[in-house]
Image 1 (cartoon, rainbow, N blue to C red):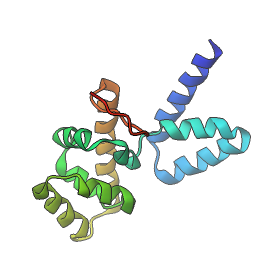
Image 2: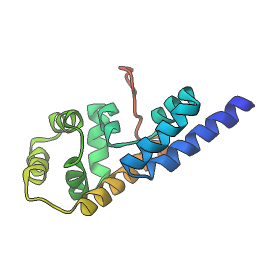
Image 3: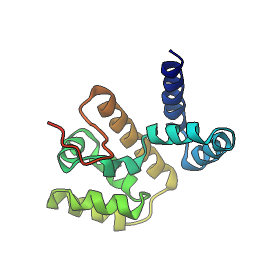
Image 4: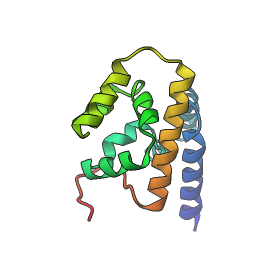
Length: 144
């Protein structure tokens, strides 16, 4: 019973932290890590971020693209890690890949606009994970 309550707390903490900007997340996780490193690690595993895109299979990525606002996705990729951006671009249809590259390499836009787009994309990811239509995997298991 204690384990279930602990996991519920971890899930809730991850959901709350997922709503914060990256700096705030990092600061709070470091505070938690000072008191309980294993809890901090468990929370980090549960937080869905733009880095979670690389945990999608190419098929799941295609399904995700159908659900997300494409312009917001393009904007949010402007601030993604290069590894995430590269994985994403490698698995896109060529026409959409060109659109994404145009936005990433295009004119500068406000940080606030990009962060709002990122939040909308993350909301879509979270909804799809909760509904079971998207599984963020950390191994090479096949899902059918």
